[in-house]
Length: 115
Image (tube, rainbow, N blue to C red; front, side):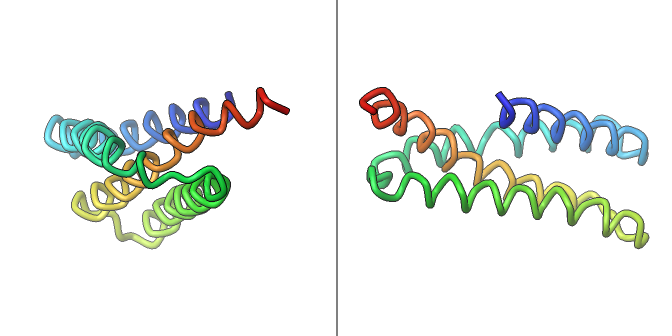
């Protein structure tokens, strides 16, 4: 539940930031594309590499990467550096790491239920 809320908050706040920063339809369209495409393309490819012993590693590394990306954006914004390509590239990395988190969390369900 926390992860879903955090993902929704991150998407909404970056979307709001792009609108207020004057990026308009181009920025919001690119944000939606880089949010959906990596998960649709990378998720099915990375799922077979998820071994039961490495699920916690995948989830932890994805969370740390995504949290650091969400901290980088306001730091650079308040420093005066927030071009569209920079925000979109960070959100692309954010979405790509999310593509590894989702299969790992689903694969962990049998381990939790068994215990």
